[in-house]
Image (cartoon, rainbow, N blue to C red):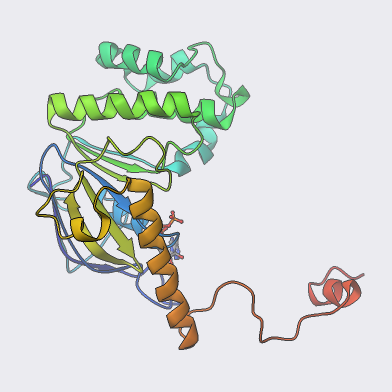
Length: 281
Ligand SMILES: Nc1ncnc2c1ncn2[C@@H]1O[C@H](COP(=O)(O)OP(=O)(O)OP(=O)(O)O)[C@@H](O)[C@H]1O
């Protein structure tokens, strides 16, 4: 297996009400492309960060390419998350061509040039003078130019325009087919994604409630009876509605609280509001 996880549970802090990950078992074969679907806070980023070795866990088996993620630091694993763009280094006055050279771009010239074309990156851009989407494109060239065996993507296409995103997904799919690379991708954007995955999984409240299942749906798939010829978008919509229902049920039992607190007295005028929130002088 390219990725093998058993009994993975994780709690961010002692104050957390419930674990971010709860008894996760996961197997991803080489060359598979899995899209993880789940509502905000389901645990997708936490799972990807742990697989990338960014958070230490004990008591679980976590192997990538048959190597223990924490003891053997497997090579060929690329993680791309949204927080990269917040790093002051990539917001400094550095020219894109210098930046890519400084991180070894010349070693992967063919892939780098292909990605520069797909992501429409100008090598003369200054990193402190570009838009969020442009910075994201530079990140993707930087992150994808070295060939990987396992790619962990945490919603990095969020600020790309649809054309660039479409070309990028095509590149990732073709690359994975040609080189057998495994991809695990957490996203909330399902436009144009239907043809991308070979598997889909559903995470909810820290659990993998539907483990990676073949996509497009096969006749043998247990999901087939429910979703038939649905698009990925409709499957996602249905799963997320169920998640919301589940949360509301927990709320009825007083176990989770989100949204408006209708049972509480709220300040009725702006003066009370400002006093309450300490805006008064
Ligand atoms: N640094 C942190 N400290 C404390 N709790 C955290 C931290 N990061 C995430 N959590 C909590 O862990 C749970 C899982 O969060 P996670 O970011 O993994 O969800 P997600 O599925 O990636 O959500 P999203 O779709 O919003 O990105 C949430 O309840 C969240 O509040």
